[in-house]
Each structure stands twice: as C-alpha cells, then as structure tokens.
Image 1 (cartoon, one colour):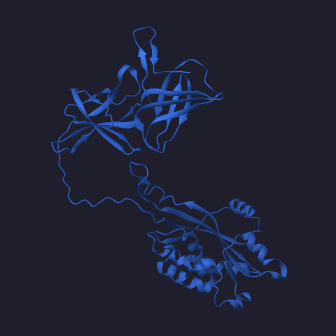
Image 2 (tube, helix red, strand yellow; image 1 turned 45 degrees about the horizontal axis):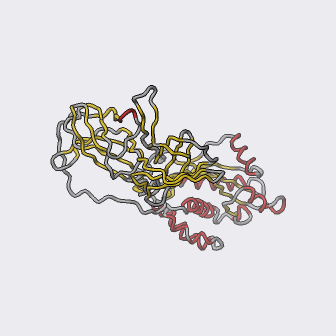
Image 3 (cartoon, one colour; image 1 turned 90 degrees about the horizontal axis):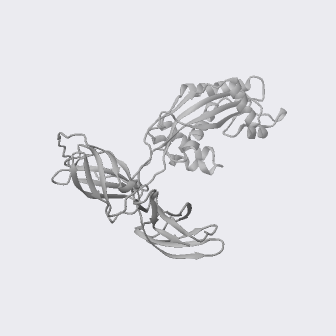
Length: 415
C-alpha cells in the first residue's frame, strides 16, 4: 500500500514524464516549454499577457474521489472491546486532473497539448519501474522542492494495484463551471482520471495466532431459538440475583446462558435451570456491571465446547438502588448523593430520575458505587420516586400490586 505521499507522488511522476515529452523540441516552440502542477489562476498570474506570454503545460488535480470498486473492500473492524483494531483497510482514491496548454503564438498551445495527450495515450499504465525512475530523478530535476527527496518513500511503485490513466468525459457546461470556479481564463484543456491510489497508514493491528489443529465434528442438532425474556411484574430489567425465565423452542439440553456486553468486553456465562423443552430459567450473576447486554443460550458437549448457540435477545442488567446518603439544597440546585450496586466501571454513565426530573453523572473514570447528582433548578420539598439508570438499564422500582390502581412504593427520596 501507499502512504500519505501517494497523491503527490502521482502528480510528480506525471509532471516529470510530461517534461520529458518536450525534450529536443525547443526549435518548435522557441525554447523549452515550462511544465507545472499549479492552480490555473496561479499560472495565469505568473505568465502574464502579451509579450510576457510563454509556452507552458500545467497539470492540475481538481478532484479526489473514492474508488467505487474498492469502496466496500476490507471494512474497518474492531474487537468486541471497541478499541482493539483488527483490520486497517486501505483508502482507495481516484484522482481527477486537468491538463492545460498555454501558448505564446499561433498553434503552439495545440501542439503542446497534442504531444502531451499522445504520451498519456501511449502510456495508459504507470509501470512500477517508470515510477521508480521518476522518483530517482526528481531531486535533481526539481532541487528547489524539498518534497522531491521524500516521494520515493510513498510506496506508490509497490502498491497492489497498478496506476492507470483513463480519459474523463466532461461536457462543456461542466468544463465551463470548473473554469469559472477557478477564476481563470479558459485555455485548451484535457480532463483525465488516474486510478487507483491505495493509501494506508501503517498501524498496529491485532493478529490472531495461526490455527495449529482443526477439529471438525458433524452432529445432528435441532435448531433451537429463544423468543422472549420474561421479567417479574413487567419490569424492563433484572437485578443481579434475580431469576429470569427464557422461553423459546427446542431448549431441552441447553447448558448455559451467555450475557455479552461488547462495549465493556464482558462475556458472562450463567448456569440454567431446565423447565421444559420450551422454557428455562437462570439467575443473573452478581459480578456483572449494570447495562444493556445480549443474551444467548449455549449447548455444550461434555468437554465444554459449544456445539450450538441460539440467536440473541437484548437483556438489561439493572443497578440496585441502595440508599440516599445526602441531600443538599444550595438555593439554585439540589445535590443528591446515592449508593448502589454493582459498582459502575470505567466509561459507564448514570442518570438519576426523581419522579420526572433527571440529572446525569459520568462517564466515571474509576470503579465506584456512589455518585452525586445535581438537579437544576432546585427541587421542591416532597417525596420523590428514585430511578437510577446505568448505561441505559434502569433500576427496579417497588410496587404495591394489592391496591387498584397499583402504587409505587420505593425507593423514595425525601427533599
């Protein structure tokens, strides 16, 4: 792959070989034509008008676009922890150029353009050796540009794809629009495209160990699936220690429930209690942080190897609201400090809701079981139903189901 100098390298190689085209043609043009790679308005200001006109061929990169063929090749990949890079795909680009000829006399612009176009036509592919030769000659050919000594490190000659030159179809309206945007007078111009430039920054990626032994075993299985996760009294989350029932199909023989939180890099198994072919239950482990998980049922063999896994369903592990340790009224705000379990871990955030008003805290930078929440403006005196939400998982509230309608009974915070 090429590095960040690849775009400049393509322009430099094209400019170098355009300069070689006019070698020995000084008598045709009254001197050696100038080859440049500048914006057309800069060229126009430099060459002037009338007697100061000179013969010049200018190469201008007017657009860079994604290469459609490479666009979906090698998508970025991260490990389940969301930070370890597994794959570093290349940036595949097409370069769009304008080749413009400036002549100081009749027919000279046309002749300059003709020689340049014939060179591009006869060399539609930049060979690897041509690129290396151009890079080797650049420091001497353009000694005033310090970048010329570094372009050979671009990796352009060694990238997977060869550099190809193709004409671009550009109508009169599009050409006129471009020259208007460039704020320069139109001159004979040829549009072409160079592709594909593959740029990739060297980076440390995680590489798995090679497979030393493959053990493949075919075993007839019934396609188990899970359909619902049933929580007590219609709650939307389950606290550590709660029993949860899972319904599905062909669940007989299941071994474990697996709770996965990719962001926190948590994969926590839990033992199950079989009920029947379509139902099982498990107890939410005490050592998992609160948050949103995915739940799957595993079927393992005697050695603990997973033979089958069901699909996944979302599952919320709730924080447990333990106590309100302090309530401080400052006049403009109310500061409420609460304790909870399990501990929040690094990067988790929390929200405390008192009746319908919420205040946020976090993300935390260390494990903790206590947070202060600032409510602005200050809360009025009274009793408030407290709900703590950690990473989208709300705490469980107590309800008196023996009255009609049911009544929330806690946890309550008194202001």
